[in-house]
Image (tube, rainbow, N blue to C red):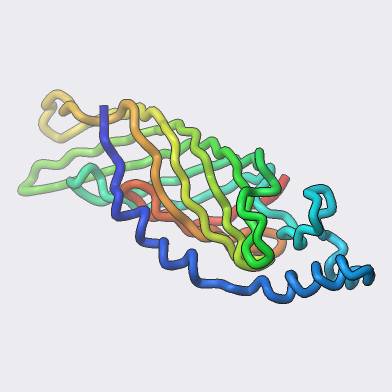
Length: 212
């Protein structure tokens, strides 16, 4: 079993959680609405189902979305790995937990399929390792504005791998198996896609998402 949790990665993007305070305009619109005034045209997508006059939510968010990320990773402390990740996210708590006028949040689950290719060479000896990982994780999206969000991600996965080298030695142990998903990322909605950057375990991912 692999322990692939790098706690430091969870804090790399932590500072981004305080990067935006851009919710004042939405809070003002909510105040006007509660006073009996009609909502401005630009706020016609306001959430009226959560009760209590909640501020408008992001136009799309990550509900029912597919993401594709290109990944740069550190290969089991032995080299550089390149890979690709496909994700599907489904929002299960659209109203979130914070109920704040300045920060809106939602909670979802995300399934992922990851592929990595690792290689290493030293003094004529070289090896390659290919790995496919399947995982599911919980994602908490914190929206600081209509477009910008940051999120932590935590879950479990299982990886399958194959190893080869130029000497015919048997494959080393300690690869593949059960692993813990842990990471954090940021989102920026730029129609028709949502840009995405993430530090997750031992790799950095950059890509985009589309809503179905």
